[in-house]
Length: 126
Image 1 (cartoon, rainbow, N blue to C red):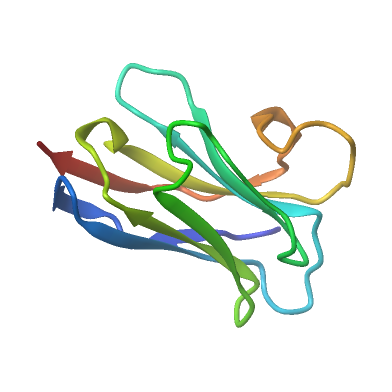
Image 2: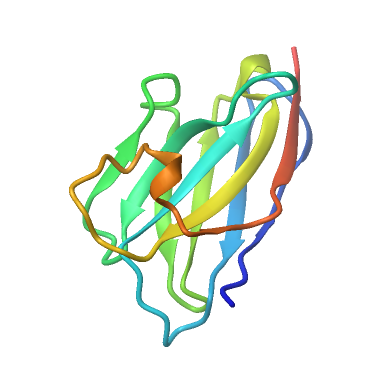
């Protein structure tokens, strides 16, 4: 069983910076990609960002491009999400997910991720 654990959320004021962490499945695990999704209250889960397992290619939703940065964390084989200049509309529960099987499916497709964390809540006050 692959265990993912997100941390770093909280109550923030708009315009600040925050880093979310995803503790991954351990150094011996090898996957295809790791991603962040988010789900605001009453809305569907949406893609935020993804990065290939080797850390070479990163992808972002248009809504966060230029403000957020994803990177790999190799000690526990997880990922970080650096959130800069966050806005009230960034308020959501943020989930880390791992895709094990490589494919040509878009990394933004949540159905292609086999493992999910429990999420960390980020609340941004305007």
